[in-house]
Each structure stands twice: as C-alpha cells, then as structure tokens.
Image: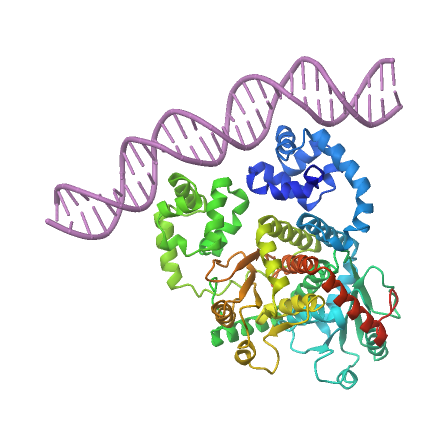
Length: 284
Length: 284
DNA sequence: CATAATCTGATCAAAAATGAAAATCGAACC
DNA sequence: GGTTCGATTTTCATTTTTGATCAGATTATG
C-alpha cells in the first residue's frame, strides 16, 4: 500500500538491478549518505557522484519520482514526519532492509566521526606493549569480547578472556599486573561485574580500554581510554556494526605497531592451518 | 603486483563497479559458481546469464584476459596450482580511520544492494519455524557464530552451537533432524568441517542458511539459502561489519515472525537479568 | 516585488553497450 | 596435409546511455 510513501533507500534498493552505471554511482552515494538527497541540490549531487546533471534528473525519474524537485520535497516532508513514526509502533513491527541499512551506515559514520584519533592511538599503543591482554565482556558483550579476542590472538600470544566458561573470574583475574591492558566491552547493558573488574584492573595499575555506547559516562576513574560507539537500531537488537568496525580498526592499528612480530605470528598460524589441511581456498 | 595472478573471482570483484548491466549478470553468475567459467563454454555462459555471445567475449576481455579462450585456459591451469595462499604480505600498509570507515560503509552498502530480499525472507521463515537451530562456524567464523547465537537465543529456546568446546562435533550434530535449520558461517577461510556439516545437514533434510563472502559458490546442493557479504578490508583483517549487520537484520526478521512468543521470551530474560540485579542502567 | 539561483524538459550528438551475423579459429577426423 | 564442424572472435548496425546546452518555469532571497 505504502509504495508511494517508500523511502528513498527503498526505491533505490528495489530497482538497483535496473540502474545503469552512472545511475549506480548516484545510488551508491545516496545509500551511503541518504541525507545528501535533501541537503544537496541537484548540481552538488551530480558532481559528488561524477555524473552529469541530466543523469541526476533522469535518475530520480527512473526511481519513480515525477522529478528531482518533487523527490526532494517528498523526502523533506518525510524526514520531518519520520522520527515520530519510527518510535511509535514501528519499534517492534520491524524495519525494512533499506531502513536497517540506513541505520547501520549512520551508526558507523557517526561513531567514527565522534571518535578521537588520539584515543585510538593511546589504546593501540597500550595494547601493543601490553604483556597480557584481558578481554572482558559479560552478557550481550560476550560475543563482542569473543570477536576482539579472535582478532588479537592472531597478532599477540597472550590474550585472556573473561568470563571464560568453568573458571572463576576472580581467580583468573587475580593474575593481572601493571603491564597488562584490559579491553572492557560495555555496550548496552553494563553489568556490575564489568565495573568491578574495571576498578580492579585500574587499581592494579593496568590500563583499561573501555568500549561502550553513548550513554555511558567516562573519565580517568573509569578507564584509561574510552571509545564510544553508536548502537541505535530500530528493532529489538542493538546494532553492533560500529563496535565491530572500531574494534577491527583498533586491532589493525595494534598489528601495525607490532609490525614484523605480528606478521610472523599470522604467517605461522597460516601455516598451521595449511598443515591441518582444513581449508579449501575459494571453494567449498 | 600479483594482480594478474589473481583468480577469476578477485578480478571480477575488483572491477565490478566498472561493469555494465549485462556484464554484471555474467559477473553474478560466475561469482555464485566460479566453476562454470571452466566447465561451460561461452555459449552456455551467455545463455545461462541471458546475455549475448558477444558480450561474454567482451566481458572476459574487460577483466583483463586476452580472450575468453585464454581465460579458460588460464583458469584451468590455475585450478590445478590453486593453493596460492591469500597474499598475506603486501597488505599490511594500514589504512587511516577515514579509509577504514569508507571501506566498511561500502561493504555494508554493497552487501545489502546485492542481497535478495526473497532469500532473506526464506531464511527468516526457515529459522522461525525451525525446531532447533544450529549455528556453525569454525575458525574466524566462530565469533560470528557466537554472535548469531547470542541474538537467536533471546527469541528461541533451542539454539545449538557447533563446534562447542569439549564436545564431539559428530555426536552433537547427529541429533539434527529435518525440522531443524542450520546457519553456516563461511566467511573467508572455509573449513572442510563446515562443508561436511552442511552436506550432512542437507542430507538429513534440514535447511541450511549459508552466510559467506562473495567468492564462494552457491546452489541448492550447497545450501537452501545463500547470503553473500562483502568483507573487503585494507588491513590484515577482514571486515565483519556487513555479516554482522545482515545477521542482525535476519534475526530481527525472525523475531518479527515469531511475534508474541519472541517478545515474551525477551521479557522473561529481561526479568531474570533484573532479578540478578546485575545491570546498572545508564551508569557504571 | 525583483532578482538570482536552480530546476525542468527537450533536443542533440557523442560514446558505450548490445545482439545478430559474418569471419576466423582450432581440434578431430580422414 | 586437408577438411569439416563447432566454438570463438570480430564486425557492424541498432539501441541505450550519457553529457551538453538552452529556453522557460519555479523557487529562494532580499
């Protein structure tokens, strides 16, 4: 029913296969940054995506709008009425793929805009020189912790996870020392245990890198470095795209710092994989 | 430097944006099933992808091969000498934060552009009605599997992970039945175990949802539904933003299908959390 | 209300893409 | 070696896409 009311991203996605090459350039630009459609004028859109003015006009027509101007008007009206609808009943009725995409792109962009490169550098430095790294994540943060550990273990030898099944948190963690660094994952629900561990780490003079969402407070009493991610999502789940992306970037900074030693480690892991003959390149 | 040595899928991906519409049809066909490039002749490729003969010839030229025939010969030779481990050395140049962001946004957008809504629907339907769900991910895919399971367990009661520490894969998996659905995570390195499990699942008449990258083949013999994610990244790690995002979306589709029962489950989980008093909303 | 900027819609020419068909190639067979 | 046949490559005409331009309509701005 709402076919005329559909989002711009919707329309683009649903007719993506029909688009020609230059139209795809526009499509990609607008999917990556939907705001442009209302913030920029036709000329800016054209030059930003490297197509001619005429193509931009034709593009919006092909998407089913009467004209670019009409499209812009529609979109402006829509974006005014948007936030209301999204919060009300849309909440658990679920978003479309296009909305999901738009949302996650925003999370990524906003998160990374907001992060201070200095913080990342400090974090990377700390991780690179740490003797042991502790990755801590309870509840919904556990998968995130798992992910971070999987990245780090490829470039450093001693990465410990908390909590780890069957072992006592306290006893494991008691061996933390001032040469260690803790990555504390605190997105969404922040457990008391997390706070306790962060405190304990700090008072053992270890460094703490706290990865959290925007609602958490920060400060030197909480963590050495705090990195915030945006995790807004329309559905019942939080969006983990931004934390995942930032963690990956952080880890690759660490790898870069480690240089040769990280590479060596990765290569020997690669060799082990090949030895076990457990992979089938390209095929399945 | 090794750009001429890359395999077909790599070539296709690296010039994907330059391809015209019909060329993309070919590209998609070959990405889904790279074997066709050596098993089929030009005429078959053309008709399978619905383009003319001439276009197929030009397509291989545009990819940098001297001709279709030459390409086929190269690919045949290559497939014997395939195990040329993914050039792990030239890559560690390291990107800036901005480049990283740009890259991940692209991965996200392009992945979602390419995904077929029908596939997602089928996958969600299958997951919603499954009696048990098996989440399978080896190696680098293990964290991804972990993540998927964490989402699903909040809306359905019986989600099993493979591999799970300390238990025999075979014995665990033997209880799979035709009312089950498997989520197979095969991004990057695809292990033999994964393939074996997918086969076993299919032959037990369970449904298999295969989440992989663009370089994998697909088809009914491999999986019931295949969902491809773009995972390009400049550094030493793959980008998991797109798979994470798609998995999240898929799970929220499932939740939507389950409706009341999923909500009920989430609420009782919430209550349990509160009972344990292990969370500190907003503060830490 | 006047002016400037922007958009529309049309038209044209150049460039690119495409399919049909002709020319060429290459291997199998005599 | 020569021939034949099927597959590939190239050619060529057609269609589609693209960008450029321009006159008139619309909208923003002072």
